[in-house]
Length: 174
Image 1 (cartoon, one colour):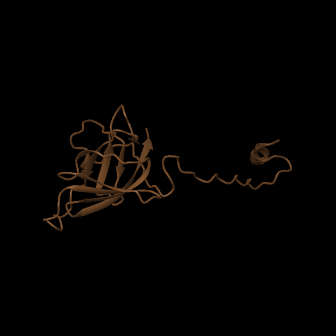
Image 2 (cartoon, helix red, strand yellow):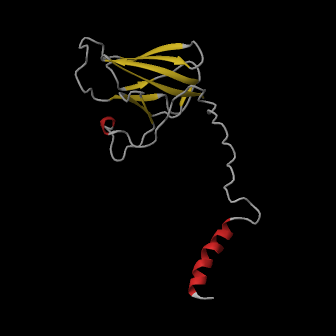
Image 3 (cartoon, helix red, strand yellow):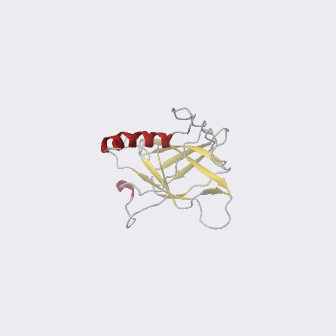
């Protein structure tokens, strides 16, 4: 066989190796994906997403090196919760507590209401329930211990210095 014959035969051999005899040439349909199921500690409707990457530049003051702490961003990106006691737990008797460092993004403009309280007020509602608690961090975003009465996904409304944001945090049973 001449060189042209071998050149034309090569693609035919390659194509034959890619399909089984008698099988259709179209790709088989993939099996349907299993529906995503939320983790037991994250009920449906919980948008808690713990990031493991570096903190944003505006939130890493006081840390050194490549700061990789578990953290959750507020929905608007106005605040981040740096989690020191991950996972957050209800009824923990030993080990780390539910320490959260709240870091607010620097305001682009002065507070819309200079008389607004700087205290960080957290109104937390348990997903799928009417259970609601309020926690305060005096002086505004900063270090805190935030405990809640029950395990589950907690929807947090955060208010400080005339600013607001929301986030979800998951607390597990200890």
